[in-house]
Image (cartoon, rainbow, N blue to C red; front, side, top):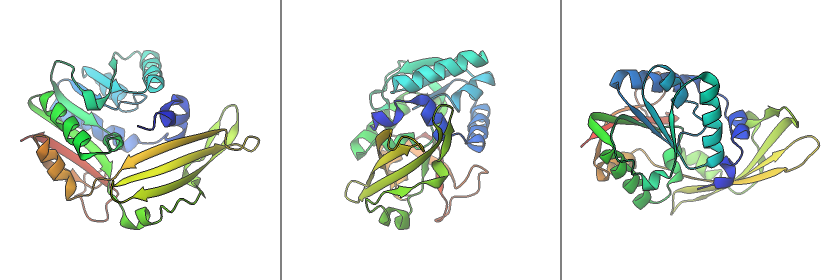
Length: 250
């Protein structure tokens, strides 16, 4: 589950600071479907806190204690009430239902086997209120990019960030792709000008291909009703970077 990668929540927020369009999309989905919202893999609350600020009763389930602690801090700072729950989406059992369940920012891809994925989706189905929806986003796998995952360490320029103590931090990544498992296994190396490799964190991410996704949802008791290729709700196409999916009980 790549626990070490999520052990420093503030580093995570510096590494992935954007996502305003994604936040706007999920806020609109919460308004569209109304009622209570559950986010699985809620991280530091980047999406759920704004949804709660709009007046929706919100629950965030997160496995990492560090991410959960930062989410609590940020919500308190903004004066927003969210129910934060430490837990694993593979073992979801909250004993109640929700009008909207969200699995954002590739969080579903930490589940590496089909059994884990289907089990999670079946649990989501049980947690949906009548008329409820699941909305998720995962990347659209690029065969070209997967083929480049050759284990060579390369600089990831887009991931450089400024740390208040270390200054500019550079990020290198070395990845390999296991085609049989559909899992990319990588090591992320964080270095400053004065401290090389002060953190080396593994990250493993599953790929879910476009024809595979509706089948997994169906096995989980869900049906894909909308699939967008970007946050402006353009139709999903072969070259889209994202698969943004709206699902309902089958």
